[in-house]
Image 1 (cartoon, rainbow, N blue to C red):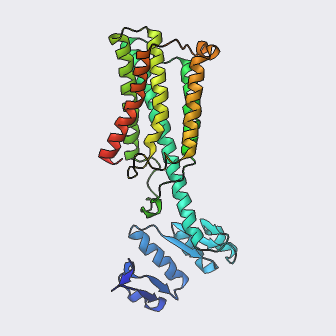
Image 2 (image 1 turned 30 degrees about the horizontal axis):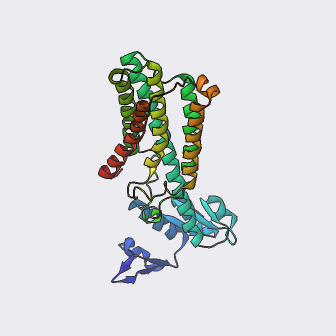
Length: 313
């Protein structure tokens, strides 16, 4: 907290060598360039993420050493601007907070985009491999997959990329710069999401074929639409674990709803317009088939939300 007995701790440069615990120091005054570098190094060795602001040539070593070097754009020297990671064009410190916030939002959106894409592509692989190798049926045709990926790969995924981030994003600790974009935990989440989606789609296909004795063509359509609607709804799983289910950064993103509405309209157009339905091998489906499709699309969303609540992932 950088305070001592409730008051800000101040250390002058001439007393810096005598100071044993820099972590409780709130203000460093009259420090020379080498001391600035030592201060940055000290906090980095303590595992802290260090930001350094400066405008002069003598600030350059510390700016370069810091995790985030921030130079002044108006009064800063060219050397300081060259070595810095960020340049404040208005020389206003509040801009640092806004820039960090935007950086965190962008980083989070990239992770959501990747996890969303990987998880439903994994589901497609499991569905095709599982049904093809056990029942010798082709659950999804090539043109159907292309149509599906043109929708899911583009519109919901892009909508995730323009999310505004969670309200408490600045209350979270900085990420470890050595940590990869997709961590082991993220890979686990991706596998769980893909496994859950594929499980319900395969179950719908198997029940339609063996339980309801429907034709392979109808079963194919059931698998396609269950997967299609399931993938679209899967975008709602991309909320943060500490956010409410119904009111979060995903549900409050109008572009998500626009993308879902457009994709659902395109799916229904493909089914009801004869030219497209013939090209995509769609056939008339009985009401019971639509019930299976609805279950195959909604149950993965429900299951993933339960997993998210229990495991906080």
